[in-house]
Amino acid sequence: MKVLQINGIFPIKSTGRIVKQLADIQKENGIEAYIACGESTVQADNVYVIGSKVYNKLNILMTRLFGKHGFYNKIATRKFLEWVDVVKPDIIHLHNIHGHYLNIKILFEYIKKHNIPVVWTLHDCWAFTGHCAYFDIANCEKWKTGCRCCPLKRKYPVSWFFDRSKGNFRDKKRAFTNVSKMHIVTPSYWLKGLCEKSFLGSYPVHTLHNGIDTDVFLPTDSDIKRKLGIDNKFVILGIISNFESHKGGKAFLELSEMISDDEVIVLLSLEEKPDKIPFNIIPLARTNDDKRLAEIYSMADVFVNPTLQDNFPTVNIESLACGTPVITYNSGGSGESQCKGSGYVVRKGDVKGLYDAIKKLREKAIPGEQCRAQALNFKAHDCFEKYFDIYERLR
Image (cartoon, rainbow, N blue to C red):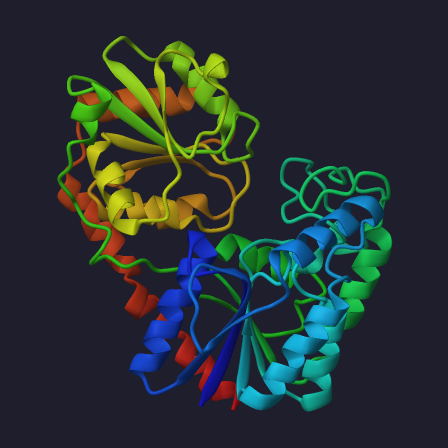
């Protein structure tokens, strides 16, 4: 069997690592694994990069000027499909097909013409909206009947001038429906519930939680705290790029005003200017090195994920696997990796609730062994092998 996975990135970041892990498990089971993506940090015979950095940046500009995200990249997509003609996959496994690298109309016309079975893992809501990847912040439910007058036009995928949500919704629905053999997979029960209410609900929808490599993400010694000069501090770890991020940037600013002198916030990937960073927040540079990530998770006393909208963030599981408890909002599927004894799930937007949970952890520490035991329920091999049952159904 040949399986072609398509995703925006490979093999880095959350979805890129998922594609890599799944491809490795496919190979272990005798499946020929192929990957197509918009960006890759590796070169291999089985990896095809669609377009180029310059070409894809041009399509970012096209989206921002004209708002038809997902409907550009015609030349690069047709060239990619010539490669697909040679590979002749038995199954196409889609992940994020948004990201300025692919023409979705041309892709689905090809799939329908050649009657290729499809598994589509949704990592957000973009597939069934007219514009956005998430609509929680706007409390918008137009996606159920037909998008229009989008309140998130200036959010990813950013459109500076035009609101194309009505036409995009119509064109996506036309492209994505009437595929003869397609199964949808959602990594969270939360997203499954939404998907079943959308125009994709006519397809079989399965929930398969994402997994992680628990042989890499495990309690790991390091000298990070010593180098940062925080040996005697209670470390609150978070991952955001900026304080406007929907991953909870403003929550960390509010937390910085609440925490005591013996507590410190460490934010991985923070790219704010130094003069905007409070004195009790320490930024750490972004890394794609999983072993380095394990060291960072392990040095923290708690991982806080105040995301305002999310599907099933693997960062929560990675932290638990390293023995570090997690406090998260009940946003989307963020709390689905939690169980009693591995941390706390707090009402979305309740920053005081986050800090109350931190204080509970300080009063009664959660053993790292309990956290890791919970994470072992999400071993990549066990989670991703479940896809093979779906592959067999589609053959």
